[in-house]
Image 1: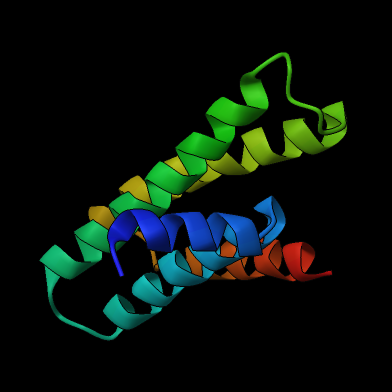
Image 2: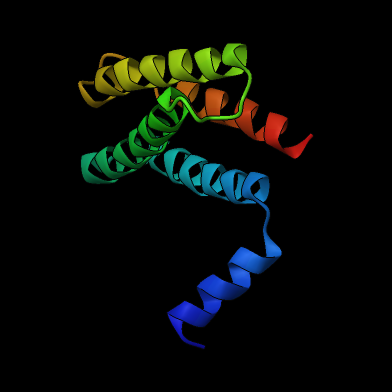
Length: 113
C-alpha cells in the first residue's frame, strides 16, 4: 500500500478529533518512553515534537477564523505557552517531564469524551 493510499484511507476513517487524539497519544508515548532513558537525544526529540504540536495548536487558535469558543482558544494558547516554557526547563534539566505528560493526558481525556 502506498503512502498516498494510506493517507487517503486514514483521512476518510478519522474525524479531526480522532486525529488529534492519535497525535497526542503518539507524542505522549514518546515523552513517556524517554523519561526513564538516559539518552538526552531521545529526550530532546520527544520534547521538541511535543513543543511543535503545541505551537501548531497555538497558531491554529490564534487564527481569527478558528471556530472554537474564545475561552477555549485562550485556554489552549495559555497551555501552549506554558508547554513551551516548561519544555525549555526540561531540556536544561531544571524540571521533570511528567507535567508535560500529565497535560497531554488531560487533553486526550477531553478529546475522548
